[in-house]
Image (tube, rainbow, N blue to C red; front, side, top):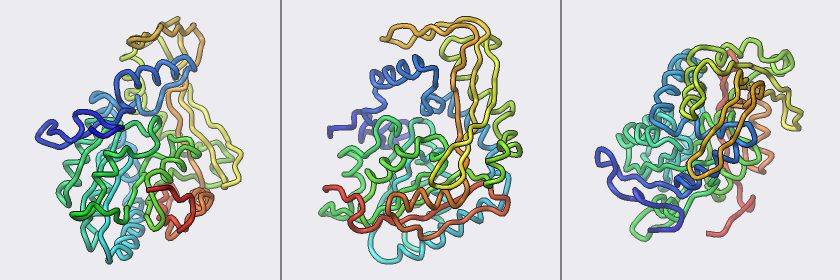
Length: 350
């Protein structure tokens, strides 16, 4: 077995799907990550999606509140970028790597518009349920591998991943299309840069999405956007994680906030969701010492970054990459950016 992956790495998983699991999702690693986060009074983003139970609640939330489900203009923005990219992939073999694949609906939408199918696809998520669900969609269009990986822990692909993304009998490296859709709002931007640089080489393409807000909306506290988070579906999803940790329902309340972020990349603000404890609690992570929380303490359960479309563009140019296309829906709620990594920018050894 290659370093960085373990069984079910490459073996038939549920339903005969070939899956692999990265070392970042080993039980011992996840226990350490969770314990450290709990001690800091925060919840790792991946923990909100990892279990099948949490994945189902997130899918219900996504269906109820995602702009891509409620506004046809958002899908038009994706189609504009996907169409441009499809035209640029007419020559030479390519592969798709979907990081944080979720349900795979957008990847399937892209593949249905591509003039040439990829040699293969790799769909990656911290949730096995979401990775397998995405595999079901994407595998209709090309040979597909499903992987489980925590991108907060392991920013780059293992050698196992690299082997899956080789083309042809000789295993040559071919052009990659890397998608990072729905991930940027919950990731540290510096870490997101490391992820994209680790998964790409010069000439590769990246499609990323950003949750948007105007400069004025960022200044006014995202008041028109907060209802997308201050709702029963979101609270049910977030409560599920706390209850799994043994914190009983009713022993905590919710507090929503907005943080204005100083940035050289344009307007940004972050929606925050904190659980405020009404009584003491002890969080016990297997193999780790218990973490005690006092009544009145706040735990950062969730946060989501909003930025202007200009800030999303500048995120790409800050890495020295070329911004090829940027599109947004008419209401300015979601943006899609097509980037190409340039020669000599952050080159890594092969």
